[in-house]
Length: 559
RNA sequence: UGCCUCGUGGUGUAAUGGUAGCACUAGAGACUCUGAAUCUCUCUGUCUAGGUUCGAAUCCUAGCGAGGCAGCCA
Image (tube, rainbow, N blue to C red; front, side, top):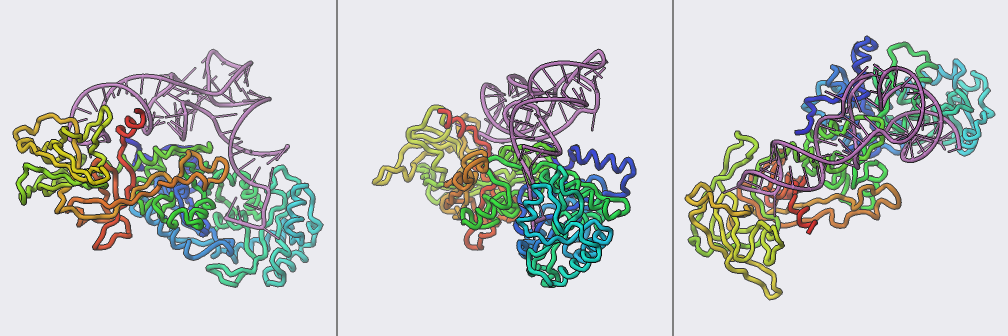
């Protein structure tokens, strides 16, 4: 059994939080999850959500959801919606008592950001710079001061106001912090605080034509919201001195927020970066953001992964500053570990082959008892119909099986789960020589619970009654990439697994007709499955969330 | 190139100067009306070299290696 979120982990950030609380640095801790609404959330965001909300939950604090919407040309309301859906899905019933109202928007603070910027100009710590982006870049590399660096406060105030008033075109001027043009850390070489963008913002419309840069907006948003621990990923490490500079320069009173960084999540056989996920969607290599093969939160949800499994996974991987590569096997294990406990067992045949029981009376139907969940005594039993004509998995029969094949073969015996032992007498083939039907005899005494029920047969296979079976579409997924590190070098899209999706027409046992999209099912011997939203009352569509562990497959691969 | 950060079994993580532990993976076995689950066992580790110390994964120095940043993106 692996850790669950009921046993919160310890990591360097939680240690800092605990110590700050102990030392009385803050009365209550407040974290935040600050996505930019320019795409869908993925499993890496889930890690961050579980960290920030998890800390709020464990330490009696609050976590804000904040849209970091300071760049109007990349952001859209559609993304805000999907982000909120995903966050709520992951957090509700777990840390929803620790959500800071919300969502908050950086754009709601534009006026305050502006006032603070005016303050900064007034105290001589910011100036309007007229250099082009190219010049700015070149000067910064050289550690050279802008010719506009020593402008008077009055002129800066005037120019900044006119920037805001829309007097200048995009890119004409910027507001820059006056720090140190030759600082070792390039983010301190007079970073841009405001740029001109005559673009419509998804929330503020055309009210603004100057927009704050990340560092200015983020630091002040954190301060305004009373954030205590501002947790972000490693690439912002070099920004921390600027974060602290802003708080110092404005002489903002304590308590102030502090920034801490952790390593983002990398998973084998996948890509976890917004940029690459966008390409998969726009190049139509997958069927949208919520394609079950995508490691987006919406994709994982559609695939059938539960919020609790995702949270447990987030806790299993830990939080460090080491840029690690987690094995996909750990995600799969976490899902299986949970689903084994909760999933309702059902019999479904993915690739059917007809079996006729020649000595079983025609028209006779038996109702057999089947266990709903052997891991849960309260789950009870159900009845499944059994008759002369059945379907079994075509993979469970081999005309010329390898050594150690435990299933059905010509002249061989196998147990039908919850039913009888059958013996394969005859194969019926089509003109092409494919086996299309098996004619078998039943050991009528071998019924589960019957006189010779204890008779040992090596294999037990699943089946469904042919006349009672319901047809359903089942989507089987494999990893999206064929190599462990598709983004290690070359074009990651060239490593796409062409067989990542297989659709089959399955035969399901009748009770599955009343299946619920909220419930998780184990189709015995096949894996864990969940209903897809594409399902209609006439036809169910199932997604395989994850297979069962399969040591026979490994065995087969070895030989 | 400069700056920052990080190096613990195959992978991910713990040990906060005092027995290198846990999980995943892999392998072996037991059990099994799911080749699942469960149970038992096994393999494999502190980047290197110095130093401090009774004692170093932990502290110091140097080296080596990896990652990040160097947008008017976040």
